[in-house]
Image (cartoon, rainbow, N blue to C red):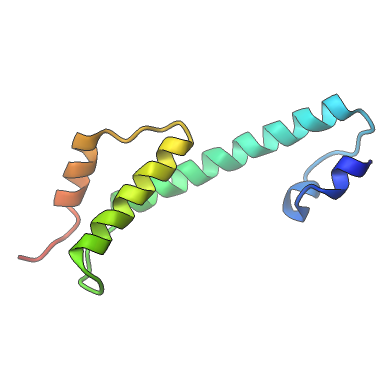
Length: 95
């Protein structure tokens, strides 16, 4: 099947062989939802355990956390500003 040729190898190996395009697209959709869930969980974990270690500026640290929150929003998980503020305040800053 021609469509199978354009799918990434990492996904292709998990897809059952089928000649029906509708079934094939259904399988691809299921796999991408699983992948999106995994990435969202990883981003949320990264956001909540991220610590400021002084290896870069505080501004860069805050921008990275805001970028992670924006990526989570693209997966349908909006991060509340109050939650993000609390995470920033508890990120291990030594004053």
